[in-house]
Length: 165
Image 1 (cartoon, one colour):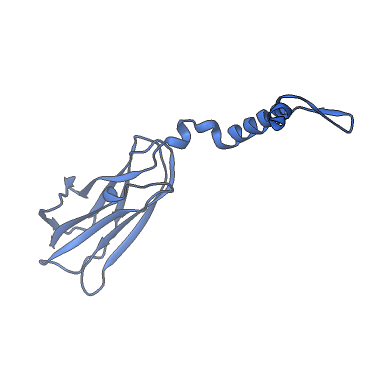
Image 2 (cartoon, rainbow, N blue to C red; image 1 turned 90 degrees about the vertical axis):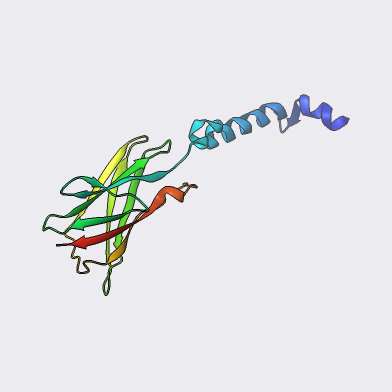
């Protein structure tokens, strides 16, 4: 019981009074400030997802599970919209488009500098050198996970497309 009594009573060391409770409280306060006292910031969610993929010109939306015929033109482009469904501003979000044509697949990546929470940001892939026509080929779009993201199910989508002239 002597230790418990010492906990509440000041001790003399070298002419100074050290109060153990004060020291413990000060350490606790420093720890709370250092970890952010468990505020909403530490409990928030990070996450991005593919909102939609469109083909321009024509502004046609692609749908998974359905084959889409895309007429090739000099200005054919794919518009990928990324949604920030998390609680934070996300930076440097990498978006990749992969057209699995043979013999040489097309892979292009673009980076979104920043995207606010709840916002959509579009990237446009153009200047694609498609060589395979008439055959159905997979077109895959993916968004690289952001730091702290745990739900990766909605970070990629595959569409079946057929290019024609």
